[in-house]
Amino acid sequence: MFLYQLLNFFFAASKKEEDPKYDLSPYKRGDLLEVPRTLFTHFGIYLGDNRVAHLIPDILPVISKNKSAIAKMVTNNRLVLGVIMKVASVRVDSVADFAYGSEILINHMDRVCSQPPLDGDEVARRAEKLLGSVTYSLLWYNCEHYVMYCRYGMAISYQTYQFCTTVRKIICSRMSAYLTALCGVGTMLYMGCVTPLTVLSTLLISFTIWMAA
Image (cartoon, rainbow, N blue to C red; front, side):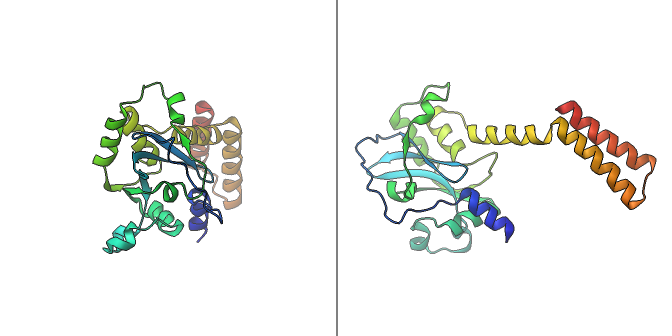
């Protein structure tokens, strides 16, 4: 239950009571759209005619063959369970369903990515070609990998890189090495198992973290 609530906090979107009216005039076929979530950003490719292709975790296609139910907007419960089970689909939704009440950024990644964007029609064709079920991975294949491949020809994720960098800074730090050594010594003394093997293991782990910091 805690894991579900944690993932729900990270990935689920809070829908506003009144859906904003989205002006479609700024969007062109092949545009990369971004909408903020709690901690992460969701991405999609605009196909034209109020249609957005995006990769989103979804458990429903695994447990149901009801196409009309699957076609409905992915709820937070479907999304979180899809993250846990690592199943997703590249699907087409309206701009409003894609944004889920959030503000939309257009082609913001053009200022971040060193690779120039492909032609808009080519971007959209790539997005349409990949429609269907996919295996989801938070770190290795998420919605950002999908849109980056479609628009720039390389499947990378900047927010995944930033996440991994942050985790590395926390784990591979001098403070972490100190705490690991302290916890190791405390555990050995508490359990009365001070042996050459446990001492060596504690020193080795602490030293490895220290050198990686």
